[in-house]
Every structure is written in C-alpha cells, then in structure tokens.
Image 1: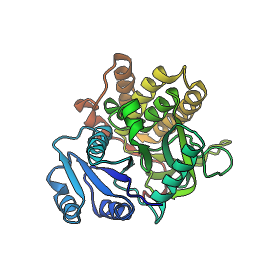
Image 2: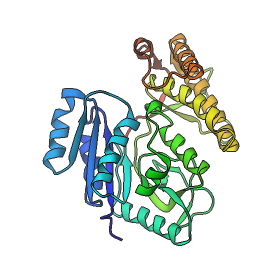
Image 3: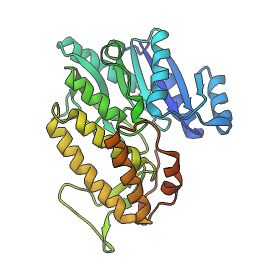
Image 4: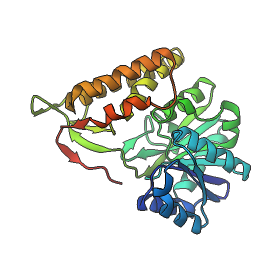
Length: 316
C-alpha cells in the first residue's frame, strides 16, 4: 500500500531531540512532512534547523496560539501541496514501520463497504484501546486522540478545521463529535499501535493508602497544572454543544473527568491554587471566553505541585 497520498503535519512547542526522532519515524512513510512550531522562539532554533536541513518543511509561527491553530496551519499547507490525506501528530509521537499503510488500508476497506469515513486512528494509542468491540480491520473508535489521526481532505472541506478557540485540550474530541453529528464515521484501524507520552503516572491515594475503585486503575496520569484550565473550560463548552447529539458519550466522559478533577485537587499543593484555576475555567466557559488562558492565571498555575507518589515518569 503506497503512502504517497499522505502528508504528515506535526505541531511542536519547544521541541527537543525526541521531536527529531518522532519526525524521522514518519518521514519515510509519507509524501511530505510539515512541522509547524507554535511560537517556541529562539530556544527551538537548533532542532528546527536540523529538521529543515533534512528536507522537512518547517513553519515558525510568531506566537503561541495553541495546538489547533498550529495543526490547521499545517493542514492548509498540506492540502495546497496536493495531499489527499493529512495525518496529524504531536512532537512526541512515534510510529512503527507500516503504520501509515495500515491506516490507509483500513480507510480503503471501510470506503469499499460504503462507509463515510471521517477519520481513522490506530486501535491502540500509548497502550489505550481506541476501538470499540471485537478487533476488526476497522471499527468504531472511542475517545480519539488527534496524534496519529488520518483525515481525508474532503472531510476537512466538509466539516471545517480544528477548533482553534479551544487552544489545546479536547480539540480532538470536539472534532470527533462534530464528525459524528454530521454523519461521518470515526474509525480505528485494528491491530495498529502508536507510542506516545501521556504524562507522568501517580499512585491514586486517599489518606495515604492506594485507592482502588471498580473499573478505575490505581494510577492517575496528571498533566501540567495550567492544562486543567483548558480541560475544564472546554469540557463545559463541549457538553453544552454536544449533549443532545451524543448524550451517552458526554455523560460517560464527564463522569470520568469529574473523578479526575477531584483526584487532581486531592494531590495538588496548594489546593487553593488549583481551585482558582478551576473557578477561572468555569467563569470563562459561562461567559464564552475562549482562546488562551488569562495571563494573570499563569503564575497561579505555576505554584501547583502534585504530591502523589510517582509510579511512572513520562516517557515514550
């Protein structure tokens, strides 16, 4: 299966050696690669120059406008280059040989059966299964992650770009829900895996003892504290816009997020700082204040530290 129809788009922010390795794992499998740096500044010069010297198209945005804006920039450029498919990646995602061909094969199999294919993602993302039901060449996906997401160019024309005012978190979930609401299938390619860093894992504790609940692992993966502003604000906005079209998914994901927010608050120090981040997120959602987190909130989020015992440090 030829991958000549596909262009890859990476978003980067302050990339290091791991970004070069990630791009290298993809470049041989696609027709072209576009790396869009999201306002890293001079500290990214060495990495981006090295990528450019290897024939990678590097776009340097002057400001940090969020992952959706960076990816949209690259997607436009890929389509202008004639891409039939765009494959989106984060800077720390790596793929094995045959990854792109496998996604294309799943897309073509679904299209041959008359499916309106919106996106194809790998069945496994960092060990997390994205395909529902029994393993098959393709099947419905759940909770897709944008890194490793194959998007046919006509789909972008039909449903529009990634939502830039979300800035970072839940950009992929909003796109997934928008596709389904408009009648497109969101599918996973059976047996396909992708490595990715999801964050540092901490032991879930209550009063100093590991907390074990049915269906919930005894570890929690915590993000950088400022991300909780975007995660909570965008969750509220997402729920308001898509509850009618996807009530079961919204209810399930909201419950899981609430558990996560409570867990994060339990291990945050000082807790009052994370509470301020949460309050600011709720106010922003209710008042329709989208885009970047308020600058005044950055030092508050910067105070927060996680106190739970580390189980596994972030790695790929």
